[in-house]
Image (cartoon, rainbow, N blue to C red):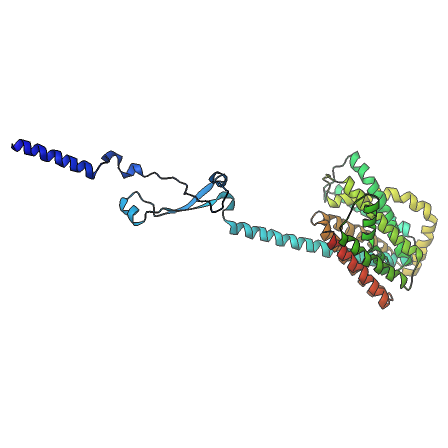
Amino acid sequence: MNNTMMSSLNQSKLAFTSLTNPIPRKHSSFSALKFSPLPIIQNSQKGLSFDKISQKPLHISSIESFSFSRKTQQEKPVTVCNAYEADRSRPLDINIELSDEHAAQKIKIGLYFATWWALNVVFNIYNKKVLNAFPYPWLTSTLSLACGSLMMLISWATRIADAPKTDFEFWKTLFPVAVAHTIGHVAATVSMSKVAVSFTHIIKSGEPAFSVLVSKFLLGESFPLPVYLSLLPIIGGCALSAATELNFNMTGFMGAMISNLAFVFRNIFSKKGMSGKSVSGMNYYACLSMLSLLILTPFAIAVEGPQMWAAGWQNALAQIGPNFVWWVAAQSIFYHLYNQVSYMSLDQISPLTFSIGNTMKRISVIVSSIIIFHTPVQPVNALGAAIAILGTFLYSQAKQ
């Protein structure tokens, strides 16, 4: 009987143990707990699946309160895992670098503009001084191109600048650009030999009107209404300045107008011919100067000629003295430098920013030339200049 009672107790104990611990010890909570290196991510945006989010690699930055202990699990049952996407890591440092680069780019563009305007003002002053003493614009234009071409050849020969890699196709596409550049350069110089520098630049501020008209009627391009409206103050301001100019000269006026038209075609040919070319702005203008020099030289000899140049040179030296030679050298050097900087700036800024900078350049040239040469200006004439320049600024904004 005792054996029977002990057997019953053992069976009851076994049954009780099975009820209180139904899972065998070898399948304890250690194996039930499975750890994943990635946290559970719940998407807060509807319509996005986890697969799309998880395409970018995640990196665990820290794990807090993780433990295999049952006691710890009971106290802090949630494991906190901080993660970040690889392409969004450390955003603060990246933003600082981008900010620094943006600031440096702004400073660089500002230096380009300041240098461009200063060189242009100096060129116009010396160019007008030379033309007052030596009224031969064709030779003056030729010397400007010759000086720039010589400067760039020396730079390439001495490895100061890398020579461009060009082919026949490059020079073929550059030829119509050079023809237009030559006509525009000579026409502007002829204009400044007949009228005040300020008046030439007031008329040349009407170049956007020529650009729109040529693009509209010859190329079939269309523009929004604000662009056409911006032409009204440009045309009206130029007309008012021309009508009230004290020393008006038709040759000077037509020279500025032809220069506007020629430079519009130069820009059109340049855009069409140079798309996809890898020549830098500095080398591009150097090649343009050399080709323009070859085009201009025979025409300069035919129009004016060596005999007229020799007589005019002796006359200028007798009036001015040795300083005249410095004036010729200065206007030739500064002509190339200001154009070179303007083409270099095109590599760094948008056409809109360049257009605004060109407008501000004309203001600086007009004001400085009036001050230096004591050009008499009537209030109505100044008003016309201001209206034309304002229209140019509105045009650049309307084309944005």
